[in-house]
Image (cartoon, rainbow, N blue to C red):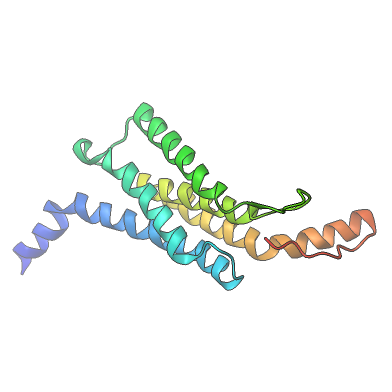
Length: 166
């Protein structure tokens, strides 16, 4: 038993760390996506979980041969590629009304971007940033609209009559 445990904990430490990073990335993305599912938005838990997991996977794939150590230039290029590519997925969530007066889906598109960022931070093993970023994202998604409505009323004296669809 001791030999097996040693093999798992010592000889496979990098693989366990990779698995942990991938799991945390998926959980962070799914937590944000669950909020979107609860509010009946087009992109939800599975999509954002996969976005975050995919981002972490790409980040980690560049580090496999370096033992989970990251070169700053390489990480910078990978992150740029992830965020540029995810811009296209987010753009697909944005809908413009036929008359050109209303744009919807910006918050949903933003959740695609933040899910990718959470995946990147989890992939890098930046645990505090991943957890704090997930909590702050959920805070903004949960309390942002009521806070915006309250502040609008407070500073302008008018109440918003149309609820933002996103």
